[in-house]
Image (cartoon, rainbow, N blue to C red; front, side, top):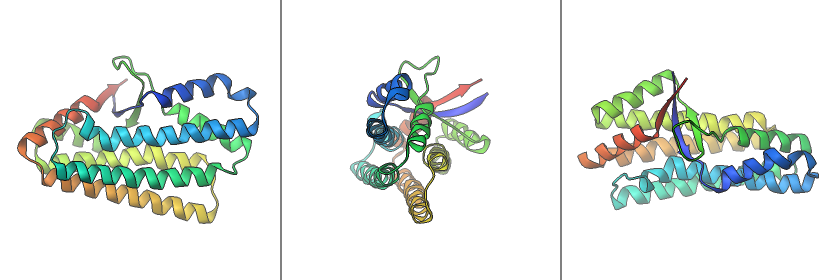
Length: 218
């Protein structure tokens, strides 16, 4: 079995991926660019909503401090990723736009026991084990470790993989690397700080959130 951490794909992203899958072959380059750019921004929004703001909107009781921290992190990720997407796609040739559209489409999954489309992030064996320990123990350090693993595997699957498919020059590569580092360190720091300042009830809510988002696939 393979462990995944599921993020809601929302409504806009699946609609855009379905349209891309059906119609992209007939589009000229500028309509294709407009659609792939919209698809990329919807992908960023869904990733942020699922990974960062999901803690606030999916039944986890959080303090005002934690909510402020999470919303600040969401703004950071949206700003960094949104600017990089715009920079890379605004002059991309048709073949790059096609590859980008196919990448974003491939990240939307429909799982057997999940009603709505999701982004299913594969977890490494060590990080999957950390999720299990956090669910079972509901201990502060285990929760910090589990969420750090979610941040790492999510960024690798959603951000690093995207810019492995989309070619960039050396200057943009440095910006991508710096942006990825900022999101990774910011995500881990914000989640760890929030968990260490949370109450026991909030820890239990977070463990339940992790359990809801975890899925096992053949």
